[in-house]
Image 1 (cartoon, rainbow, N blue to C red):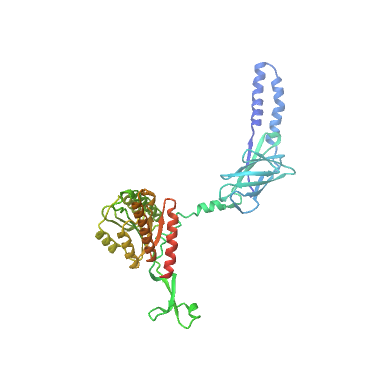
Image 2 (cartoon, rainbow, N blue to C red):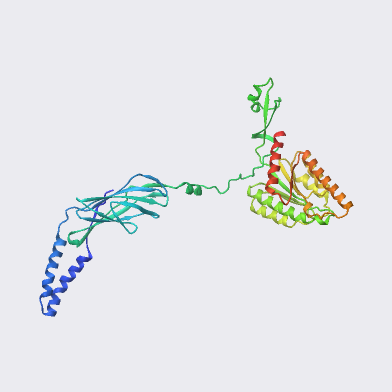
Length: 431
């Protein structure tokens, strides 16, 4: 873009010449010698010639970008064109923030934004590479200054905006700018076990007169002489209820398993809380406590506080436990028991819920690492029988439709939950 002339200014050299011409007569009078005046006469002549000399051409400046689009951190070529009747031009560029001159050809870079261009035949060219370190719409402006005869005057030219360049952000910046706050679903990701109007297929079965015609699977029906229909899972996400089992019975040596149960339940509350699941909690510590289904940080803190108050109990009030399950557990609900499984009452409640169509999971905490091996043969035999009965309970739960995962100190909770989730997905396809 061409920039118009602003006018002529006097340099410091001209000021020094003028001061010498003014002081010379007074010096001659004070010294009584005309020598200072004689010396000042050539200086005055140079001053008159330099200030009164006419300008043949007003300087002009053009700043032309090589392209109108670029990427953050990539150099953009610019051409700087100067026209003036002088031997040298001084160009000062007004660069945007985080923009630097990475390379200059045909000019000498002075400082961070200055250029010295040698003019031949009334003009000069310079090619620049400007790197923009910040994305956005940027324009480079500038001013040019040329010196008059005897370097006594400066003539500058300034103007408006040059052609703008659109600088796009790089890949890392784009990912940081559009990064979502949370990638999880707002209502959890537990698929409902129940059937209903949804998009996830459950099974293909023979069409019944009560089924809507839209549910007919025409691709499967074309290969058979009967009509087939596709059942689907309901779109409503399943709720999640955690059952904290701190029952140790009369075996005081396995009370340390209660601490492991508390840590596991706290980990599940934090993990499912980040996924925006509707969480509920049933605590069997001393007396049965029920915390209703809800989501959010405040509800998560309430559940964690309740879990931290868990204490070992010998025998809970099973009537109260049954009343809580009858009033709160409904389909679609996923009930996860975290239990050392030392009480037959917990196994019976889990089997009863599974028989009623409730999705049930059992994180069985193995108390064996905290049990001191018995020394006599009778106690050793009883210990072996107890382990056999416990293994039988786990097999009965798995055969009855309960997702069973056994946790040990050498196994991570994530592996247990992944195993239970895989079993649960296979079960949904069979229902």
